[in-house]
Length: 176
Image 1 (cartoon, rainbow, N blue to C red):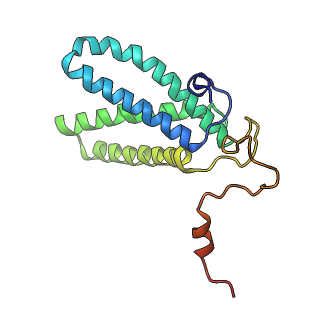
Image 2: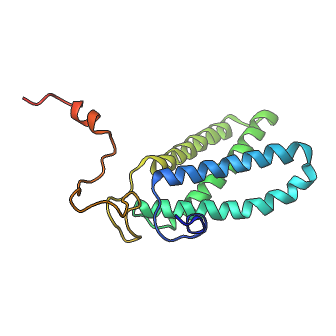
Image 3: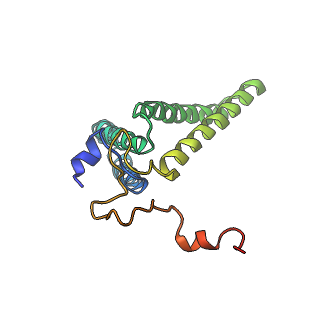
């Protein structure tokens, strides 16, 4: 696989495994940079985080669009996902800032809690869609199935099973 296509292109499809690997790599890279620079070189970290954040946002958007394509969804849904993530980040910063520092009324507190629950449910659904749902079986309007390789023969035309066969055979009532 060409890494430039995987990380920077918005065309094609990627399966769950590649999506997870790229997301974990981005998270690890950001965490290492944050731990290294934020405590020791705080003035340099301010400038460096913007230089690093822009390519990371691009890579995140590109891999998310390809994952949405695998689910046979438009890549424009990635914009909605990015907005929900940024709103959650801003909201939780505001919520914890208000909660620990300012006395707010019960009605506002209840509204903030309801918004927290709604955002959490929405983010949970996004995680389920992107990390756990199987992609479209076979080719779709965005390209060929990324889980099928070129060495698959037409003789073995069974669709891939998401659960190991030994679990499928033992699940459910016994045949009579």
